[in-house]
Amino acid sequence: MTVGDIYQILDRIAPFDTQADFDNSGLLIGSPAWEVSGVLFALDVTEAVVEEAVALGANLIVTHHPVLFSPVQRITEDQPEGRLIAALIRNRLSLIAAHTNLDQAPGGINDTLAALCGLSDVTGEGYVRIGNLPEACSARELADRLSGILQCTVRLMGPEEAVIDRLAVSSGAGGSEWKAGADAGCSAFLSGEIKHHHALSLAACGIVSLECGHYATEAPGIRTLALALQNALDEIEWKMRVFVSKIPAYSFP
Image (cartoon, rainbow, N blue to C red; front, side, top):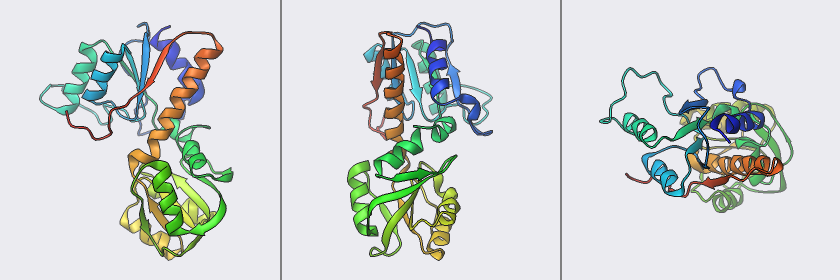
């Protein structure tokens, strides 16, 4: 199986042509013709993740966040991204990023987040999912529950005693999507990052803000993507080693 074969499977799960105009998803480093012995999934590619892939015998890395997100004119190893790209090429590793296409995809990042929050009757499109909680609870109770589910510190902005029954979620830096939650009559809005002025707008609408961290709201979705690839490989009876990175999000070199 080649990098191109894996790309085609991922494209069926989260079509790359649905990515936002500003995005840089797709095959970023390597060749579609290279054979794949193993695939390592990670939210981000770092030098530690490259080392992990080499140790595992995986020669394709699939991430959520892309490299080369902004135009570059030179790649030198005295800069972090240049050093990272050089390490990928030196180790003959291919890199595929599934970013905004995976955010939006059915069963992708935001659907995974909504499921973890226990939402039912889920609606929404693009970067927002909206649904009902199993039962109404206070904002503090919901924040504490989410802290355990997502393994993160939850920053609650709003009255702790506010009653929450309907929740909007938008992973990562999704705070700018707050209006979709307000328009849908939600009592709380959850995202990885919520800017101060967005939290103020939500408060003015009587909506509690729950900021759970970029990593915590997106990492579960990359694990879901790894499982989807494994299931697709099983269907065609193709043996392939699929791994999910165990490198801590903010590990030092």
